[in-house]
Image (cartoon, rainbow, N blue to C red; front, side, top):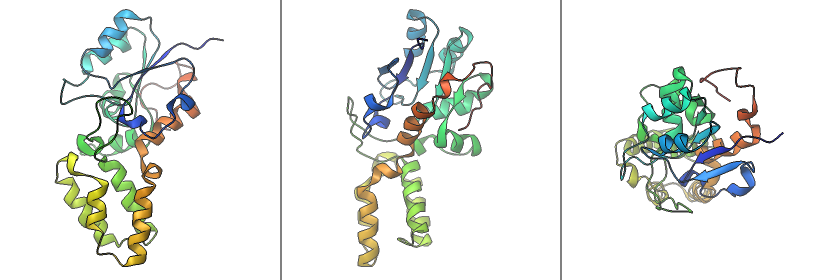
Amino acid sequence: MRLENIFLFIGPTSYGIALDEVITPETVILPPVRRGDIQTLIEQESPATIVIVDGIYHAYPAVSHVEIKNALKQGWDVWGMSSMGALRAAEMHTLGMRGYGTVFQRFMQDNDLPDDYVALVHGTESPWFPVSEPLVHIEHLLQEAVRSSVIPSEMNYQLMHEMRNMWFGYRTLKYLREKTCTLPAPQRASFNAMLDRMNDYRLKSMDVIHFFQQKPFLYDKEVGHGNEVY
């Protein structure tokens, strides 16, 4: 049986992923979504599956709720995860948009979680090189560093407090290296090694990988609507 197309809007979340090895053959890769892209797509294509991962919201207006609702009304399956997609899925899950992954769960569980938790500065074209790091990744890294006794919990608290209150473009790995330079040498070396393995803590990218591994878009469309959490 031939699967319907999947239109995947993705940008910096794909950095460090061999995306062609992850996606299904039916997947059409599109750049980060912006206002009007969904409306244009549904006017040109027959209903299939849309997956929103990344989106633009500074240089251009962000993808609107109205165009996503129009897609749903016309019979499209619309999934969101990782970044802009997770935000929109959490906002629109009662309307039929489906959410997936760890980042989506965070927004579902915490209505006060700021949008900039998933924001970063990045290159404007593939491979979408990340200049800064999303706070959702940094939080995951720091929590693991505390669990592994690499940094004290007080340092985790202080760093998170500082970074929550700064512009997301200043949240960089260089900043973390500088702020942890006072750690004892063994812990500092361990923490720097964790930074060198940053892909291990990039929850947004892992959500995309797991989505295409688990293939929830193949499930019966009549089972479950909108509030999927895997």
